[in-house]
Amino acid sequence: MILIVRHGSGRGRIPQYCEHVLEWVRSERRDLGARLRVHETGSGPADLDGVSAVFFWLADPLEILYPDCYAEAMGIQEEAGRRSIRVLNPPWALAEYGKSHQHGRWAAAGIQTPEVRRVESMSDLQQAAEQLGLPLLIRGDYSFGQDRTRVVRNRREIEGIGLHQLPADPVVSPLLDLRETRTSSGRARLWSRFFHKMRVIVIGDRCVPDSLYFARHPVVSREVSEYARVQRWRRRLRPYGWTGRQLRRAVQSRSELQSMLRLEWEFLQEPVKHADVFLRAAAAVDLDFLAFDYSCSTSRGVVIWEANPYPFIPPLSDTLLGHTRKSARKVEGMNAAFADGLSALLT
Image 1: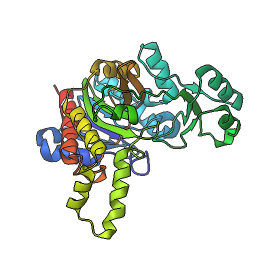
Image 2: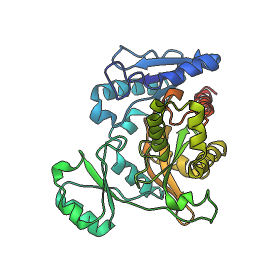
Image 3: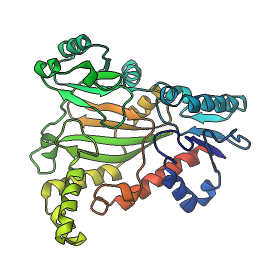
Image 4: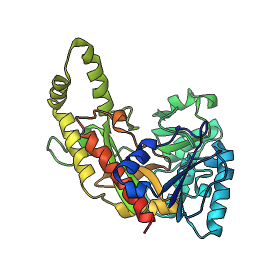
């Protein structure tokens, strides 16, 4: 039996976190589904009878944002230790998890990642600009997504910023530009024209490819990707009577987008390159389940931007350009990989 510990009602960032994934496991892998037990924090004592592994599926930074859940999870971990039960994503590893924590651990392990510095004052920001160079990326150490993320490109922009305009617990990093011309072919020109970001999810000793986004903005995310831009364009055309088939043909007629779709599909179908790097990076932060956002270049290799130990695995209804990206197969593959990772805990 595997005990999955997640946030209870009114706790955490995502209500019933990834319940759709568990429903898929119960439906498609019934033997495995019958051996899963979910405990939600705040619901009373956890039942560890017959449990061989405890998987803490909890949000970071756990102790800072959700101290009650942290205390309960630590109690479950201690009891699991007394019973010699295996623990994944231990709550102490999620306790104060942030970007500066990631950088320190990865730098010590020799993993390539941009430097991250805490900013306590405007003089700290000015000093970082002198030492790290411009442009700089400013984020919150514990922020999620691109919340209040900003890029400063020159000293005039820095002088125009007030400390109150920065995100909570601000950190700065050099903004690396990994665009490069790889060959003269149409598909390869994407690497020089657009910024890109790849995502891989680590589940135990497995690395599963998740997405490849291209964007015009240097801080690549799902929300600023070319897929999101095309989806917004499609929604504007629907009121004018365009059918789904017409929209798909219009999308497919754009050669750049077609190249992006092919590159992402190849990325999803092939074994993860540099899997050893991601497994070492996961071990460095003492976690067994997390997503890595990274980019690659022929000159620098793998550069890990950040890791998310609480990644959302979207259902089909929440994917961008669902049919065009073959998202049904992608979601099915991710659910199956997650189930395989859980099955490995029972062997």
